[in-house]
Image (cartoon, rainbow, N blue to C red; front, top):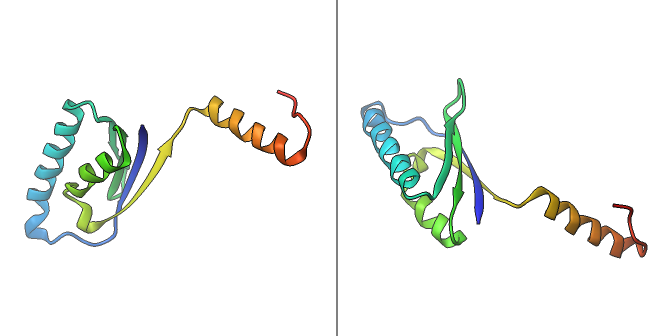
Length: 106
């Protein structure tokens, strides 16, 4: 299951912790990239935040990974489940057809 995780800093980090947290963040992302669980990761240009795409077996597995997110205490985190666009549109079309009582054109 794939999830988009978006984070934005909400609380300033104590200056004496910044370099250590940056190092911990680099190690955390490298570990999850190496495991194949983190497919992509990025930072937002000019902002204190970023995101990534995780591919994990369950939401509980993602919860475990995010529990170890070094910048978590200073960030707002949003998690979005990702699905295939065509499958999603097919599902929405079928639901709409059922509500309208008539087949929709595909």
